[in-house]
Amino acid sequence: MRVTLVATAAADIPVDALAVPVATGQRLSGSALDLDRALGGLLSELLAGAEFKGRIHEVLPVPTHGRIAARRAILYGLGAIRDLDGQRLRSAHHELVRAARTYGYSRLALVRAEPLGLESLAGVVEGCVMGTFERRSRQTGAQPERGEIDELLLTGFGQGRDHEVAAAQESGEATNHAREWQNAPANELTPDVLAQEATKIAQRHGLEIEVLGPADLRAGGYNLLLGVASGSAQPARLIKLRHRGRQIAGTAAQEDGVVLALIGKGITFDTGGISLKDPASMSQMKADMAGAAAVLAAIDVIAARKLPLDVMAVIAATENMPGPTAQRPGDVVVSADGKTVEVLNTDAEGRLVLADALTHAIRNGATHLLDLATLTGAATIAIGHGATAAVSNDDEFWRLIEEAARTAGDRVWRLPILADYRVLLRSQIADLRNAEYGEAGAILGGMFIGEFARGRPWAHLDIAASSWNTNSELTTVLRGPSGAGTRLCIELAELMAGGAR
Ligand code: BES
Ligand code: MN
Ligand code: ZN
Image 1: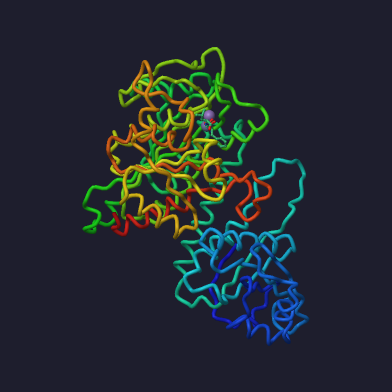
Image 2: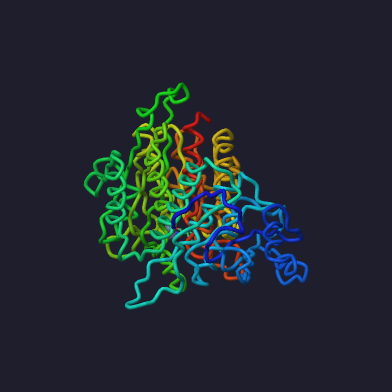
């Protein structure tokens, strides 16, 4: 999809359909009103008759009978203005584009009108690009359900903003890459294939890459990762990509030695191991590498933009399988950090592999740690699919993450780290236990990982719920794989590259 800013009056753009945003309870104004006049009041008539209400995801195509250059106008809803945050903005445009594709339009234009301000450009473009996502079909001879949009023209956003458009397109496409990886079945996307994907990204941008296999992991003492991997026939991979942005531009802000580590949980399939999961929804666990997907997609953009910030992506990739060589509940494992861990539940594997991944990032000079993981079912209980559940040990770092999340339309909500809960992580026979805390699962899962941050600013994003909405009633949150965390990571790197700390 080509995305272009134009200065043409909306009525004069010759496309299949011209999209007009409307919020609930709102009258047409500005360019939308001009358009309505050109159409002889057709749009305001539909609004007055309440045939179109402006609800989020409402989409109504209207024939134009040659009164304007576009063959159709499309009214599309933004919902209530006060609810319109970055995530809903993107969701509304995601749905607009999906509807346009269903109708078979290939040339689409969009006119900016109230309540969309000039600052909505990135969100509009990202949402539209995300709406082009189609999971790759593995059906033989299947015909695509929807068409493709070749061209998207945007009017009313001003000129000279091509760079912003290109950046938003990049972020939207990165989100879709993460979604595609999430969607890939586990027999296709093995730990080694994930490493190959990382290698492709590294080669594209000339990034440093290191892929550790079982022998290297043994040498480095990454026993938590190896323990999780021990039941699998697929060799584990600890993947590290390094973007040396400081060498690109040495501004004063970049001289403080900051190295941001984006750390992704890359469990390519989570059976639960010996603590086997219920079969009912186990197939969903092909997406237990959503954290890795987000981190990979993000560093691809960070490197492409040559951001003046040192960023590393660290991915702990393995399957979690049962079998004669699998680790057992009750096993005690020595982490790369030296702490001993009693593995009371082999299904709490994410925190184990992430602990070693944090140690790897720290050994390689990371100063700021952000991990992304489909860590707990408890995140769904605590918050649901509408936002990522988070914990952090550092208010300043958290403030940056929140700002990045807001800019990116990639919601996060911070849960507290309570000192009182630390006793719940203790084991009778080891330094830590990985499960059986009883309650506060999303917090304690995060707190376990935080034990390996060695006092560095760290935040943990539990994307278990936000990366894949399985609630069919929750229609305005992206359904299926969402690429949660991808745009947040890109925006965080942007902020920090700009000197924010
Ligand atoms: N990958 C799962 C968490 C998950 C659940 C992600 C549902 C996406 C959807 C994780 O490895 C896991 O199994 N967590 C356990 C932890 C428990 C044993 C402490 C859980 O949440 O049940
Ligand atoms: Mn698990
Ligand atoms: Zn898992």
